[in-house]
Image (cartoon, rainbow over all chains, first blue to last red; front, side, top):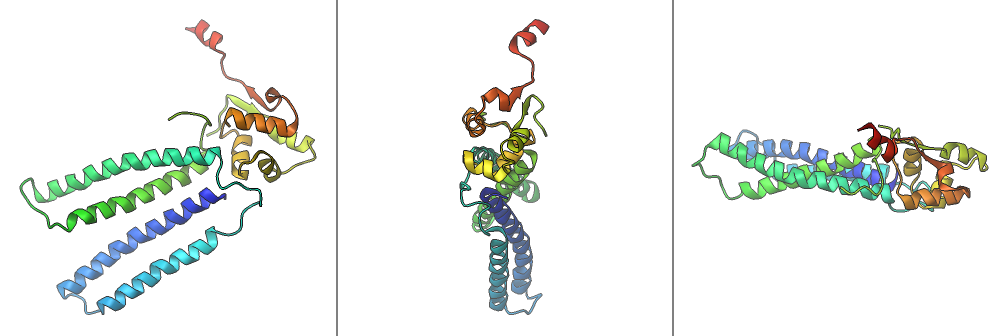
Length: 154
Length: 80
């Protein structure tokens, strides 16, 4: 694996873990505040941060080992092409996710309902994390299908 | 998915030039080993610049390394 590929795997795995763990955290926090759970909230937050950073540290040790060769470039033309296409996929997914998020709210709550203000930043954070997953997935997938032709304008 | 129109002789040329490895060729032309691997397997068609660099590394003309086996524009026009 070259540096771009390792970076994409690192970000992809960490963002997937982050998404899955966030879902679990939301459930725990909801239970704590609704009184259904009696666990110590701050102890849980510290434990969660340790879990996430611990996984990041371990995956960094695995993916950021030494270069294949001292002369290996940071990235080459194929890496740039792959990253450019992944960025296009991520940009398109922003609009799809944004539309889908508002559609879900519309369908679930109806046209005349209102949502708390904190829901909007949560939507943008959710989109940000999903876009990160999509970008890195697009990079990883392209490395396995070849990356196609050089000098092709997209 | 392999690109069937562009054939290359990189593997043969590597062995004919002192059995150099993909990594050594990658270092010579300034790309990663994965790019050489993808070109050799026909999964990636390099830019003209990189194609010339590879040909220069082997000290052979471009057409000795890469051969286009698709339809020529004249043939395609005649078929229409």
